[in-house]
Image (cartoon, rainbow, N blue to C red):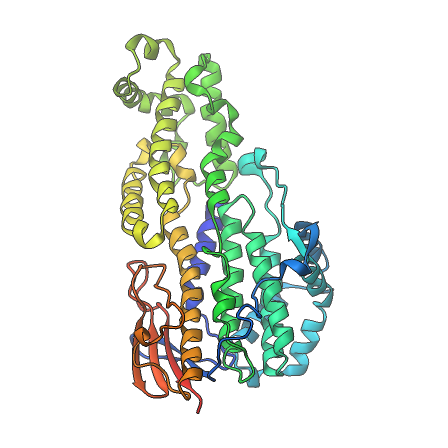
Length: 474
């Protein structure tokens, strides 16, 4: 269906995001097996005070107000003539080294975003973001202009890149704060799709940090990165809503076990559910039961429903007293809650612990959902939670890697420009572990000025895991 298509598309885009070039000052070398990012760095000591620099707006700089209205305003003041052609140009410019850009053309395009940027800046000065979306609408709820937010974020990324190239570190840091705040705010909406868009914006901003830390004037950002929320994007609210969304759409399902429906009432719920899936883009080729009349679909599942309810302790008298459609709905609802909770529960623990269980649960769900006309009606609405959990953890890994790089820069500043032989030599500050696998990052020193830093292999990815070649400029 349409909502699931959007979610699948976003997951695909986010899954390939780390392989997109970061062409400001960071070289990427691709051989036949792996992609490497090369960073040329200057030693940088710990700032004094340690928290002098932030990647989110300071509390003192904010005032009471709702940032959501200003984000909506930003999407309403797109540059005149704004089109997909301009979006594509910005994407292409982000893939080019800064010295290959037509600066006049780029600056002219970015100048037309000045009002958008102003609204984003004002939003960063508000201390909360409440989208006030009509969650009671269920599947029909209209989401904010997520694509517009991401397009603005790309333009911000390009502007940050120009600031860095021109040595305007303060301006780059200020816009980074605004972009990071925007990503977190967008992810505060009640849907997983919004959370994924927020993650994509945060990932885009962190890519610009790679360019920033390569400038000779960039302060050490170890504590700026460390002071970010962990996890950076908290999917708790979105997970809670996605689990309950079907009951917003069909409130009569909430207390279905304690109701006494007529056959017509129960069959109407089944009919409405199937019609809703079709209206959202469901394809009968994907869901064979849609070729059946609702009454026929009920009879296909009725014997399974009676056995399920009997196993759950329902008396035969109670089962026989309820309409067949109600028995099937209770059966499928309870089965759905068991399966969905078996997926959602793994978001409550760190990803590196949950990963094998999530993978196993998703495979079980996939097997259970490929039963043709026996497919559970409710399971169709479950998102691809295994990939969602990985993408969320991968963002935190990006931060952990950048923290490690900044720790190396700090060590070099303390040791006459030389990098450590191992990460264990860095004792003044802690070195984070990989949030995806729970393992230490892989580090090897090539010589006094060069080293390789990489993420451990994860079952969720292979060649696309981050690998850096670091050079300390003498």
